Length: 303
Image 1: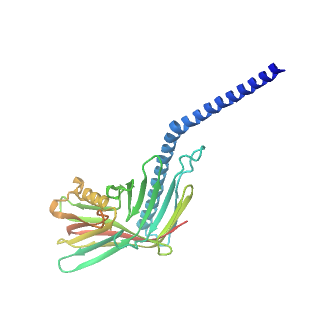
Image 2: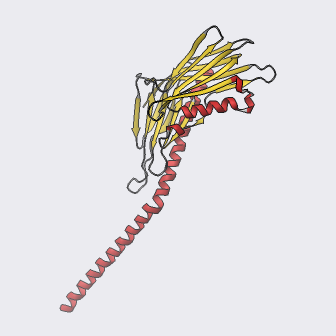
Image 3: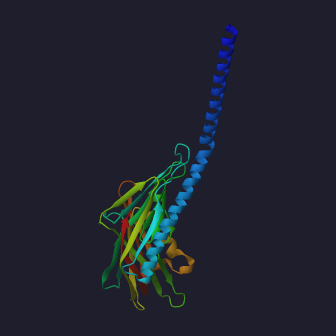
């Protein structure tokens, strides 16, 4: 009898030991997956999501550009953007959140654009626009990325470093000098964004498809012929992303294909606020003979 009881106890202990060993192996495998596989998988998911966001914002820009080019007042179009990622099958690892913000330009220190001309006797403020659409990504394994649509440009900011932002998709701005006549022509598009309720709108989620509905309220095209003597034209942009704009304008006027001389322009930047938070970029173009401006006003509704 004693031997039978001892045998049963020994068998029970063996089963417990085997179970503990199996559990240890399973936990080791799960730990290995979480430590080695999941971070790489989650990072690739986040990179793919950021690429999709860039595609969505680019599509938004393209539809606005097309509406202005066609002068399609009253047109309604939609763009969609995935705010975050769903995460993996284990503990939702890799789940991220995103935020979409429509700022109609309520802050006078940011997102203000204007164009003026001066023929030597009269200085006129021709156009004023404002408003930005911003996607803010909150990643876990890949660097945080924000994509901002501002006056026709798509700007990328990484890890919150606003002063290191770059323009990924250029706005419609071009200035060039005719090598035969020395005439300077400037072409640009200006975009005004306003929210449906005239206030800032924000939506955020971890796994939601946000819809950006845009209504083209007004478009126009203006051609100004300043004659052989020309007129001075100033483009002014006040933005948190002033370094990106300064780099863009510098490249636009200094490109060899534009044939602009240093005496034909001047670019200056004025900053203020804590750590130069805000900046104003002035692009002065001298003796412009022709200027073509297209502009549009769009009402944005986030859902």
